[in-house]
Length: 202
Length: 202
View 1 (cartoon, rainbow over the protein chains, first blue to last red):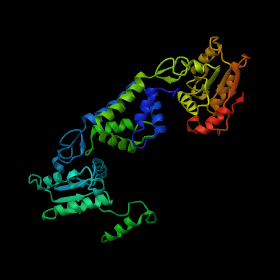
View 2 (cartoon, rainbow over the protein chains, first blue to last red):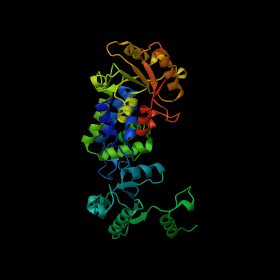
View 3 (cartoon, each protein chain N blue to C red):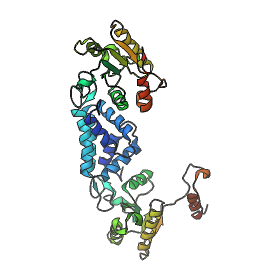
């Protein structure tokens, strides 16, 4: 098409592949970048290349990290026997933000999903069992913090079954219930039902 | 903070600077890129660097272009005596998409805005007059297609006044069936196309 630049169109095409970015936003971003200094555009491009080339995963917990082991796994204060199992790296980030948990993590990198052909061997379950069996760092509690969808539930049940033979390990699960600061009126039945079933002594 | 990567945070920080991208979307984009192949991330980074380094502006009409003159100015079929005056390069793109206009463009690169200290000398008005006076390519119609806001209106009036002495040049303006107070960017193609077809004598 006339009246446009192939270089611009190529940048728009690339930007439009990003999640949550349609062609209109991609165009707005590209025209915005054209107005920025060359230095700031280079910084963005470098950061993206670096992201892909320099980032690694912690070989212990599996979290996205600048180094291996990650800052949590290499922190002796956090070896308190608690191991929190999550689906993805960003879940570690979210839980760390709460300042509630001071133990270690294990990132599965997915959940069991027969429909997507993802079985226990496709996620980091073996690595979890290796850590549970590691006598140097004894585990006394495994906290399951997977998403409350059917795949997360199935994966939690599966891991719980694997850990049954370990009498010294307590398996817990984060509480699923009514989110804080909301009203019952806006809560779906499944959540309300779960909140009822897992009610606590007041 | 523990549980995160500085490289990841730096990429998020850079992405969050893009228009329409908050920290949450920036994080989602960064984690999405981490899952992509190195090749596709490189393609994105290259496209952004290329955007800034290789793109130029047409010295005739001022549009963002891969070459100078641009594909429109170098197309002899489009030298039909019609000159459409727009504010920014993206307006050329939007008008080209309608397939309504087959003449040439002139990108002002802004509008007169006393509040922002932008006067006629800060936008490409002189270049417009030079083209109007160029006897090699006679202009017989100048079509004003500026945004229908007060700056666009003021600029239209200013240019109309400058062109008054040229009896052989008809000054027209795209029809504003477009609601006032909006911008060309947000108008659908059909409306823009209609507005072009029903342009009136200014």
